[in-house]
Each structure stands twice: as structure tokens, then as C-alpha cells.
Image (cartoon, rainbow, N blue to C red; front, side, top):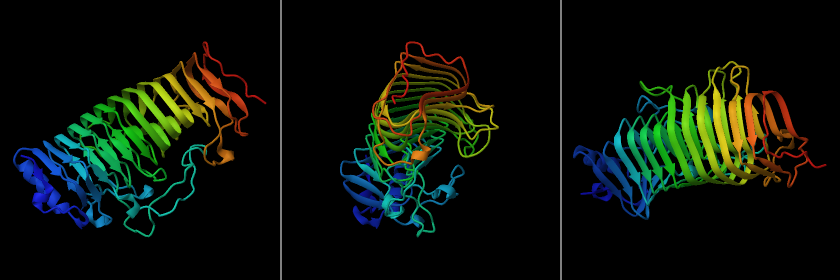
Length: 436
């Protein structure tokens, strides 16, 4: 029989703190070998709840699990060995729903998980631009400096779990990444609506890090930071290689102030991924492949990644494939394919390596790009000058691709800037000169 959290003393009045009651329901269900814990209609304020193996947490229609506005109600930075804070970005290792080393764990709707981000962010927008002046063009809110404890970290966290399902949920107002999958195997994320403030920093939609066999589908994501990420950052995992592989993402609609997709971060391997059937309503960068992020080092090796059937209402930069800061790195970026990508964009395609990391075997097939003006003010001095900005790379191929100069920002100077690229080809493609 399902166990209702109200039978353990939970009160859905939006005021009562229900952490202990919800945890008691989960623990009781786990003690019986597993089952379903039900959150009925109501607003249930809570701190951290730890999920267990063979537990389904079901949020009924009208049910809301809402994060406490008090950081002291969440787990500590050392609550489990794989946890960590990030003071540089303003968040702690404090989470709302956590599953560590679990099997067969499910969180399902149609109810809502609400991170209560307004309790931790500054109240007004703070201007910031990034990514050539095209990311964060809608403003950005950061950690409320009046709260010395910083803000909670990732809202839902699954760490080194197997057979994870997150389905038919509403995830909203996250103070950090909405759903973080770290070192997990056999994962399904399906039918979720993620709705975060478009100016909320670090409010990623779905982060897939060092995971294997992951299927994400039928999600609608609006958020202030990256909508979906593939990462290979395994330094906090226990006895697990930093490999992210066998991932498919399909049939999603994305709106992000930064990246629709970010592929990179860490020092491992990302491979065998398929991204298809995506509509990008807005993104500062549509698809960012970045080997090294934020520091010198080995960087992430990535290969065998396919992106297809993409439609973009607006992207700042449609595609950026860059070594990042890996000036001394030796990571490889190769065999990345784009097919049937069609978008309106205000920025350029950038493919740039470094001596140790040269993007190789990058293929664009049946893609079209039309320039438009920025929908929000940017920084002209950071705008790209050439639509194709290619450097320090090998075997770049464009087949049946077209560029149409539509609305033209004054910062554009030329169609292409190509330096130290071996054998670029443009079969059946048209990249006309910039109209004067």
C-alpha cells in the first residue's frame, strides 16, 4: 500500500516544515523493502529528503514540495562522500531531494518540485554578458550577498545510482541545477517541465555527468543557465571512471540564457551521444562543445556525437567547438556531426583549437543559418566579426549548407576567418560575402 506523507504528520500549508515527516515516510517504506511514497495536493515546505532504493516518490496533481527558505534545513557539504560546494559560484552542497548509491529510485508527477530560488537570489537583475555578449543578455541574478550562508546547490541529485526514473514532473524555481545525475547508470528522464527564471545564474535544467545509458525525452525546459549538459567531471566520485557515454536526448523544447546544450567540463571522456528532434526557442549559444572549462589541464576528450533535426527560433552562436582554456591540454575533440540544423542567429560558428587539442572531423550537413539582430542589448565590442571563425583545427566539412545574411548587426566584418585549418571543404555550400 502507498504511504502518504500526511499519515506521518506532514502538513501542506506552505508554512510547516515537513522534512522529518517526509523522511519518516521514505524510511518506513524502505524498511518494508520498497514501495510508493505519495505527496498529496498541498504545498509541503521541506529541507533535504534522502531517497532510498526501490522507492517511488509520487507527487499527485496539485502537490508541491517546496524548498525551505532557510539554508540550515538542508544537508551539509559533507553529508555524503561525493558531495561538494562551489563557493566561487555562490552555492553549497545543500540539496532538496538526494539519492546516493541507490537502485530503482523514481520521482514522478504530475506534481511539482519547487526550489524556492527567490529566497536566495538577489531581488533585481544584475547586468552581465558572457559568450561574446550574447549570453546573459536577459540579465542575471546571483546569490543574495545578504545571506552569508550562500544558497542551496542542485535541487534534485542522484549520485552513483542505477535505474533512475524522473518522469512527468514540474521542476521550477531551482536555486542551482535542477536535476543532477552524477555517475549513474540506466536513467530515464521523460515528460518533465522545467521552469526557472531566465536570469537565474547556475539554474541548469538537466546535468548528465559521468553517466551511462541515459535517455532524456519529451521535456520542455526554460532556464537561466544551460538547458542540458553532458559532463565528464568525476573527481568527486568513488571508484568510477569519468566517462559519460550512451546518451540520447530527443523531442525537447529549450529556452536558455546561456547554452541550449553544453558538452564538456571535467577531465574525462564523453562519447556515443545522440541529440535529435530539438527546438531551441532561445539560447545565447545553441551548442557549445568545450574541452576545458575554467582552468588549464587535460580537458575532456569527446567523440562520436551526433546532433540532428534541430530548429532554432533564435540562437546567439549556433555552434561553438572550442578547446577553451586547455592551452596545455591533450584532450581530443573529433567525430562531431551536425545534420539538418536550421536556425536564426545573431552570432557566429566558432571552431577553435589549441596546439594540444585540435578539433578534428567536424561535419555539417544540410544546415542553414540566417542572421538576425540581437533581441536584447549586447556589448558590441564582444560581438564576432566573421560568421565562420575557424582556427587550429583539421578536416572541417560543410556539405549542402547555406548562410543567408538577413538583418545584419554593424559589428559584422566578413563571412569567414580561417587560420591553421587543414583541408576545410564546402561541398554544395553557399556562404556569400557580407552585403555592404
